[in-house]
Amino acid sequence: MALRFKEVRSRLHFSQIERHGRGSRSVRIRMNSGNKEIEKWKPGVPKSALLLIAGAMWILVGIMLNGLAYSWLRTERWDHAFLPLIIGFVCSLVIHHFGFLRIVDRNLDRILPMEGRRCVFSFMPWKSYILIPIMIVMGVLLRHSPIPKWYLAVLYTGIGTALILSSIRYLRYLILTLKGK
Image 1 (cartoon, helix red, strand yellow):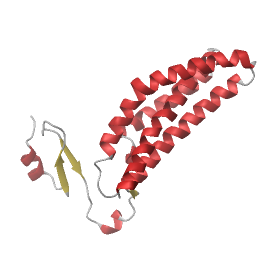
Image 2 (spheres, helix red, strand yellow; image 1 turned 90 degrees about the vertical axis):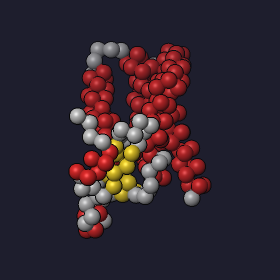
Image 3 (cartoon, helix red, strand yellow; image 1 turned 135 degrees about the vertical axis):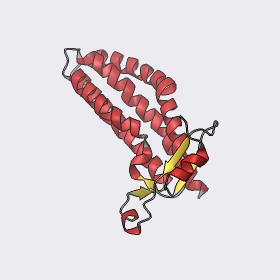
Image 4 (cartoon, one colour; image 1 turned 120 degrees about the horizontal axis):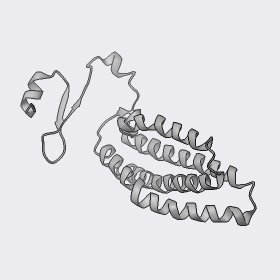
């Protein structure tokens, strides 16, 4: 049974309840302890810092993946290493445009309306924190699999370069946010 907005507000003792979304059925609840001693220890940062952290995180992971791809291809002759790099770059454009830009836009839609200081870890949604260990395990399994490093270099170059390209949007909005202040 769905509770109406007023019923939720009367049943809960939270400092702030706000509607979001078009249907006005969804409710976002922000908890505030009211205890100033606890509040001062929360790792709160402005939204410009969240944009910087998100952009930097995507760039660093992209550099790490490209670095692994480079370490696998540097032992190859340049003419054998050139093809995986080109294929990886073309794949990165597709991954960037059809995959990562959608994720970035959803994160920006969540971060940009934020007011005041927010938790430093809110630069990505909590569901993404669940996916991170899964992606790390998959990466370790791929690196230790019998798949030739040549093929992995294409995959890692594609994903790494797409992450770097997509992070530019975070940094662009960071600049716009800082100019708007």
